[in-house]
Length: 554
Image 1 (cartoon, one colour):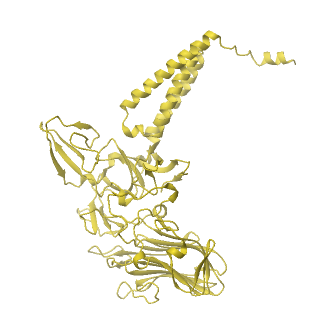
Image 2 (cartoon, rainbow, N blue to C red):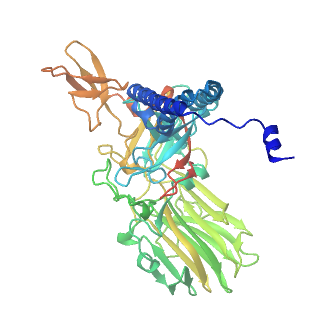
Image 3 (cartoon, rainbow, N blue to C red):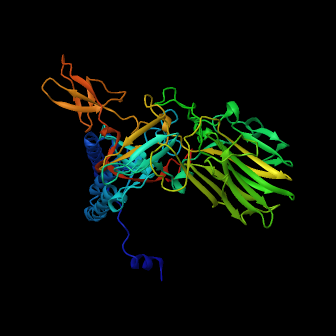
């Protein structure tokens, strides 16, 4: 078969556009692009600020102009049928995208740092995470505590906020000693005894902030830890402990506190604000975690991980060798000393035991000891092997099981690691702390909030610099004609000449009029009405360069 016959069987060659068609195509391309630009500008004028910040709109306005230009070009070439077929496909795609956006998944840009360091929004460095939000999650299921939610801000519903869900409908929430405590509303209108609201494991791991290595202080093992007994030396990436060696971090003036930059990657370049909403770096943090890969030497009998918190010493003691056992201890005592007194009169120092739970000499094991949300957790190779939970006596009445500890004392919080017998080699030594929820000025050492039946309480992970349910407050503004509206009391960009009310509507005060402004002392503005809930944040998908931020949100 000749080349010419092959060409004939495959169809006629496309004719080249004439010069007249090309000229017309260029004119229609410009006209189409102008029409697309006009449509984008019109939509930009009517969309709210939150919609303008979404990735969908940012990409859509560029694609819209390009689409209209392409349509104009195709019309100019006389390809009406091709245009019609492509417009049909485009229409289907647009409808599917709108359904996806309004009912399933939507992207949001994070403008502020209220959820840092887990989710970033920082003007100084230009790092703004984009998150995907599951909009149907709460259409088929109820919100769960410690999920990250997106909602319309109750004091300006034109803005979308992202926070962590803390209080459920009808609950009493107490913020005390950095932790969250809750009580359920009873049928008679009262409340059950308060109890700690422990985080699920996924949320707990997501919010733990690294103190060492890195942290606000930086420095090496030798500069951050104190050798309390024996020899402890760095050897490359390893820490080598001699016989009966012991070291600690957080003693005395170095007590572990709520430093703002704990958990931040220095490469982000984020600095602590000078005008945070709450004071930070001044409170001792009792919820701590100590982790390391530990390889005991032959002849090592025990490895001890210690967390001293609120005047109580908590110990995880791991036996080494076949037939050895492990245990958890908790009691009053001094860090570095063996003797402990039971916290509860007549109680026991040993609070949990694990026969057969042990380390093997010469073998590396990932060990973690946590004191978080009034619970001791010992993990071995990523799995919990021993736990012990307790409550504290801040409420009157019976407790819901478990030991009842007295209210926390003011004391240093520290971590220690010790070997008995021969030494050990450590790698990946890590000290972490939990979120330490701070109390706004004027509330003393605790803050109590009663959540309405149709609302939620949401707080930011960046507790020291988050505008959230702890501090939200409103003012009433009454004009001369009797019109009364509510506005955000804490909005730094708002004044009486021009302001936005709680519904997102803008008001301008008539010239010469001085409206009456009063603080609204009701508690309703501390909470997020259920109807303002938009969805559940599920992932950070942008940026990927120069900071790779992709991750699931827990």
